[in-house]
Image 1 (cartoon, rainbow, N blue to C red):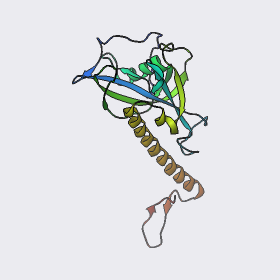
Image 2 (image 1 turned 30 degrees about the vertical axis):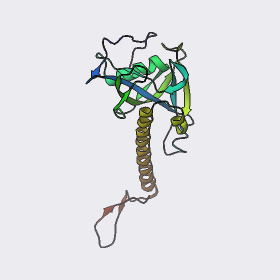
Image 3 (image 1 turned 180 degrees about the vertical axis):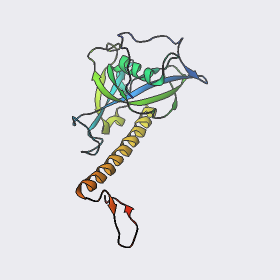
Image 4 (image 1 turned 45 degrees about the horizontal axis):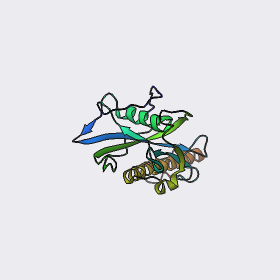
Length: 207
């Protein structure tokens, strides 16, 4: 799903439009990712985790607490719109939302002492801006996919990216199966149908 969002250089502020669910403030954001080595990425090439990197941003409270961009989901926004807006405001990233939310997590804010309901969506990064609304108060870092867990500060975000990894592995397996079938069909003039003497025709693929 490609999200179109009107970028402004001012972050939304205030809580008058904020969504709550049974007292929990609803926050949404993205896991911004890109393939660092492949011009036309296919998950079946190379090592899946080594070929992907994600963006983490610093907290406003200090540069050593890293997280994925996220913030309040407001009444006048769809889920994907809010996630894309927060990602641009906090990280200066534009991209394509890839699939549904990775889950719903309840967590307590250490600074505010209130409960939140968090959601993250994967975003394939298309554009990295040099200027963004919160550039003065945040830093952003590209991190290798295989080492994010040592740098991300929030356990619920680590769980979300574990779900994302599961999705990628599932896609990778499907691509491998599809490639296997395609190679078989190209190397055999049987259209994937094997005739066994004395038996009915059966579909098969040797992988």
